[in-house]
Structures are given as C-alpha cells and as structure tokens.
Amino acid sequence: MNLYFAYGSNLNMRRFFSRCPDAYPLCGATLRGWRLRFAGGGHADVVRGSRADFVPGAVYACNDRDMFALDRYEGVCRGAVDSGYYKRKIATVRRRDVGSTLRAVMYVMTPGHHDAEPSDLYLNVVLAGIRDWDLPVAPAIAVRAEMVER
Image 1: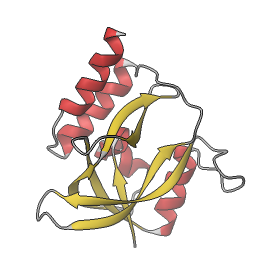
Image 2: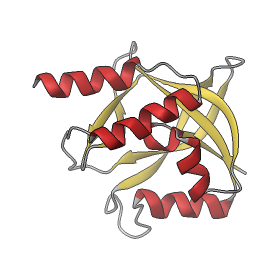
Image 3: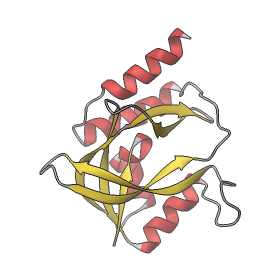
Image 4: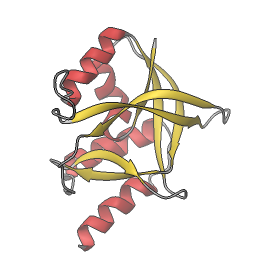
C-alpha cells in the first residue's frame, strides 16, 4: 500500500473515489512549513513556506492501480524530469487524530506555472472536500482572498 497526502480537489471524497475506488481514507493530516496556492489553470498546489505555514489535507492508503490513476489525473509524465503538470514528492505529514507523523506521496506542480485564481466551481469542489474531512477552511479562503485583492 502507498500512502498519499491529498489537498485541494482530491480531498473531495466523491471525486477521489471515482478515480481511486480501492483507496482507503486513513486520516486528516497537516503539511507544516508549506503553503497552499492556486496556479496553472487555477488548480491547487503547495510550495515551501514559513515555519508558521501549513496545508490541511488527508491521507489515503492507495494500491498501485490507484496511484497510477492519480498519476494520469495529475498529469505526471514518466519521461523527462519536470515535464508533466505535477510531479510526485515524498512529504512528512502530521496525523490530526494521534499527532504522529507519516511519510506520504504528494503531488506538486512542476516549475513554470504561475499563480492563477481558481474558478468558483473548482473552489467549491475543494471546499466540499475540506468539509468531507472536517479540516480548517481558512488556508483555502485566505489564498483566494489574496488573489482577488491583487
């Protein structure tokens, strides 16, 4: 089994399980020292931030078939480095239920994608996923508000 740290639209359980039907929802989790952003076509991404920054998310246990489906969905290219839309990265996240840490795969955008405001539809999918996991909404709302102010 692979552990996968989800943020953004992959928190939305209905959508996630339509792509990864064999996955198991493990726990809510927090990625510390990173911050959420919207980039590319207005999709969620994470970038290194300050020690105070954090990204709320969740961990799913996924088999290899589900991970392959995620790679396809996220536009991961198995050829040249950084040639796809997202790439896999191993991250250490803290479980929200018991406080221990886990190492999990996450996806980060490849270089060259600029900040872009998410559509209302996409943001609503993200917010529904945040509610699915009972996670803090503030980081996603704050990022959107900063983009609107620019």
